[in-house]
Amino acid sequence: MPDPFPPWFFDRADPSPDPVFYGPPRLVTHIDDRAIAAVGALYTELDVDGEVLDLMSSWISHFERPPRRLVGLGMNAAELAANPMMAEHVVHDLNTDPVLPFADASFDGVVCCVSVDYLVEPVAVFREVARVLRPGGRFVTTFSNRCFPTKAIRGWVATDDGQHLQIVSAYFALAGGFGEVTGLRRTPPGPGDPLYAVWAART
Ligand SMILES: C[S@@+](CC[C@H](N)C(=O)[O-])C[C@H]1O[C@@H](n2cnc3c(N)ncnc32)[C@H](O)[C@@H]1O
Image (tube, rainbow, N blue to C red):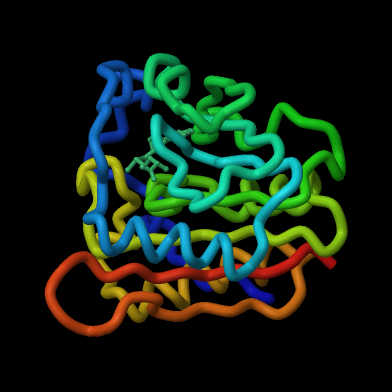
């Protein structure tokens, strides 16, 4: 698949190192309760369990039932330490090093909630997710229509929700190693934060 993204797409309004922005802990929720419930329901429906990596995670991982062993990767040690579901966590800046600090085929599932828009090398990260997933394991990404606009890539800020589904689907296709990609809205129309999901299984 040819690269569909123009060169400016992965620039950001705030190009300063991510540890600066993510240094202060934010023990907040980034989407409303209905959207959080939609994330948990999707994880249950897709049976995301076993050894699971929560990529770009914080103090809350949204599972209805915690997976057997949850590992978190994010930018803020205090946020990750406050996560009650996490067995272990690692602070790792994916925008300076997209290589995941885990062995091949070490997870049954990987999730990434309301964070995919901050990746400046998303295809490299998605390729790494395929590497650390066991065959059949799913990578489940979810997002809404809010973000930290100065830290999100310009291509995300310049596009709408429907295009975001296409953008994340393209990341999966460009990365390779994944089967059929599913992308859709998980919350009904109406007030509140919409929740969109794009996922695929490791081939
Ligand atoms: C909007 S918060 C979402 C947190 C959590 N996934 C949730 O659902 O509440 C964005 C998260 O992306 C993580 N993040 C941002 N830039 C990152 C980077 N360069 N490398 C790794 N994680 C990053 C931050 O640590 C932060 O926890």
